[in-house]
Length: 192
Image 1 (tube, rainbow, N blue to C red):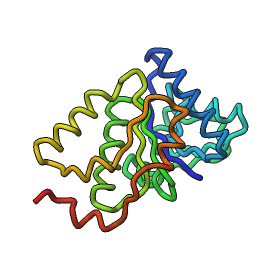
Image 2: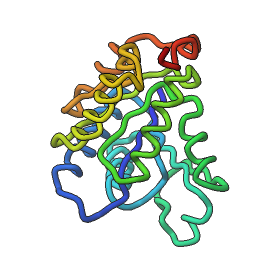
Image 3: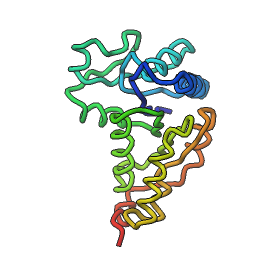
């Protein structure tokens, strides 16, 4: 199994987020998951990679060339793909993935998560999307998504696009239990 993980590069965040990232990496490695992430060495990105590597897991980094020029890439990865830009990075990270997990992050993580939610709404990505709501971090975003459903910008059926969990150890069960999705979602993407 190959899982795309979106997460932060900030090193100044609360330790509890690092703890959640370590627990997630350990959980994924224990299930023989290949972790695909943004290729960085700092913050939750570095934490996920370091923990998985220490435990014998396989980690794939995908990073734009301009980030390597300022040496943001993780130097210990066995597999790293250097791509042209941020758009290619997102596309490459999703390529062949069996699921997406979003850890807490900033604007880049929000953008990745909302893009993959949009792709799934359109039936262009059909795999599970799991939001790891560590410390309630994603509460306001989840409320905004719920508000968009209440106010008819999205339909009730779109709630099946994502699954929210609190504990990293629940991620594989959430992936297994995620509602089926298909390219036919395009037929109800627009709210009419």
